[in-house]
View 1 (cartoon, helix red, strand yellow):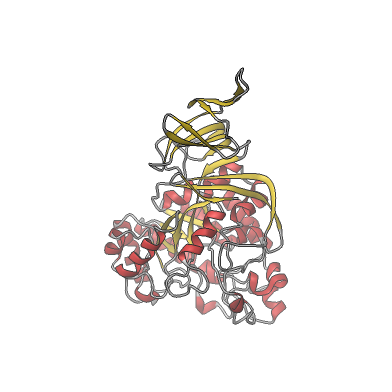
View 2 (cartoon, rainbow, N blue to C red):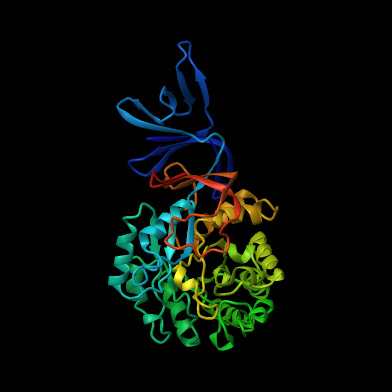
Length: 453
């Protein structure tokens, strides 16, 4: 058993917040009891004890958190007022395994997730081989079971990410695929997309789409504006995203299928989603921390470390994304954690791959850019980083409740840290060297500490 004592609990599912003690059944990996904060007292003999809703426990050894009671090993962690929330859930990450493990693998990716406070992740399927077959799906899921966190994965929409033939979506769903995506490659065939949405709906699984029309892009990863002009290249225009979002929302509305617009980057796309959500409860959207934090100016400053698909755009777009998060148009925050090697990112701008890592900085950027600046409450931020993504993918996560999963993150929102070392294999981040608020003290998954600061 484990007691988390004196924590300020945030539960976005019930809206409950305040000082609570949480009793965890570490054998079952579930929350046994949640009760108002107890009081630490001293008896006449001077021995410290913990008085709370779980009874009085002798705790002479509070320093190491271990004490014996009635034959059970009881750990007690005094959180000293730190925040405790559901373990974070990221439904858009790349762990590059199989096929590209020089960038990341499932184990190092999971370590990065745990360090960032995430207890559940959903992997994208653009691996080699792609997750378009039962064998690769089973490999990813089995590797994930060895990590200490919950590793889920999408399967591909099309065979080999070629956009020509649908995968056996029903079979892959039955074998554990959390959803379907060809992330990184847009699905250009409208008839194929319609069929995919129909089949995914029968499986009760979402389809997540990368929305960039390659026919409109001269150089990916850089906005066709100030940044592209600075480097003397054509770049990626906003119309590449807008046109695809407009088409795909129309089809999804007709098919009444769950569709998630990935890593939204333009103000026009935010408004298209806003209007579509008024007509259907099947429309979802995600925003990345880098898109609500940075603009194309970051590419001028950081070069390839700020190159990504879709690209960082203008200040008006950044503010529109924040407003979309604020008013509920954008349901969730997802990192699009995209590790690359230092050698790859050292290539010239037009040759280097797009993408940055994000699992270890996401919570801090949410606190700094959204909570500290008054756009979201801490409860709302946690909801968009846990409950909302869990709901889309039908995961048992994102809430704190007696009998519920003992997946939690403990963090100090005011404590500062410097971005300099990563648990990820990669370090391709434009936030290197920055001082950020929000230090994760513990990540607990299935009742066990998988990360401790």
